[in-house]
Length: 486
Ligand code: ADP
Image 1 (spheres, helix red, strand yellow):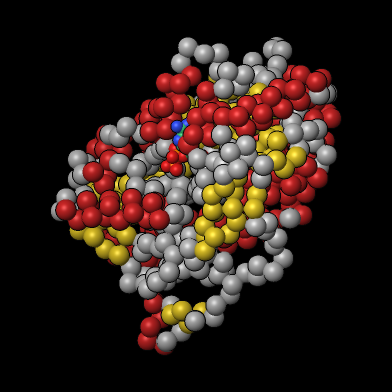
Image 2 (tube, rainbow, N blue to C red):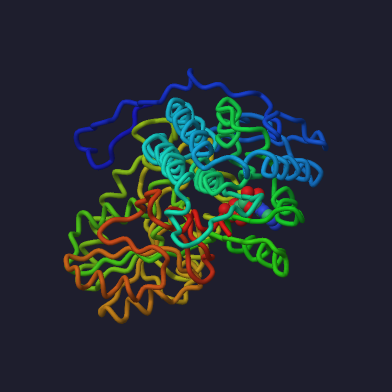
């Protein structure tokens, strides 16, 4: 059915549906574990469904790896490390990584469609952001593989060995690329576990890895739930744990590796501040707010979920924001017009709805756009809360959905204090006309990344990571490479 553009109600103007075709993608009914370049049955013979969150239909059955399977994967990674990968020259390793990047590019459309089906994100995001960035990470790190001694002058860079990598569901393919590409470039072998709700693009990547001729055992992909992840973390022969996910699980992992030889990087939750000063270009800033929290359903760990607006422009910003919210399309992730797709799982939708209830009970004022949402699948309207105070739960805890809290401030010192008053420190945004104000704020905000007059921009060359309960270690750039080297 054609959807109405709510800002154009008077003329009854509509966009025609523009769904991306699924005819060119191929999904198996059942996916096995990818160990030693072979598809193997899980020893428990257990499988779980991967659900399309927009339709609630099962896309495929996924193998559930247990401790024995993880052990098999780690042994295969160790063997590949000892016998092949650690002996191979950087230039040869680089060739394989370049090949993987090129093969991903060739199949970019297929990856984008499967990502949208499995994860719920709009095809525009997966096609224009996730997949190109994932390819870029492989290209970027491929270039470093034979130049490690130039990347770290006066040092003798040495791989760590076997890297255990556990990733979340918000950027399934991109997170796999963030983890695998630098690990391989630095000369490590890998056991990677995708999130239980979004295994499909990692398994498609396994197909490419096999086709690329990468030596057996260099990359192993084991699917499953938290117990599978825990088996990787606790395996005695893993040298490095790289984790992206919730602060809660990050703390469990941190406790598990204390006192072991394992190196760790943790990229955890966030409650990032997006700050609009009174001299900001307001229309661009409103676009930045929308991009920061609503695109991608707010499923971004660095989402600009706390908005701080200088008091004298607050009314104007909120008015423009509400008007822009009314033009956002919520619906079919495969439709090219869609701005906000499906929430990844029923559990996550329940969490978001729980926080919306808490926000109302705390006395904050709610505004949701008037758009209709599909009756089937997991969807949430873009939501803002005004009249929020610092102590409100919705201003303190990570919601991980399209829900924005709005607070006002008068002075720069006040907003710095408010923005930093959180257990997290992943990212922040600053919108102002003046470079001096940008420098002042960026030096005082306790966040791993601070964007100025933009938001949610990524590049393989730039390191990304957090302070405080948002974790430690950096991914991307040379920092991301050094995390996989002695
Ligand atoms: P989110 O809230 O984003 O789903 P989680 O931290 O729950 O984040 O999950 C991120 C990844 O961590 C997933 O792949 C999940 O299966 C895995 N995981 C969950 N629990 C554990 C655990 N105890 N040990 C290791 N990995 C885990």
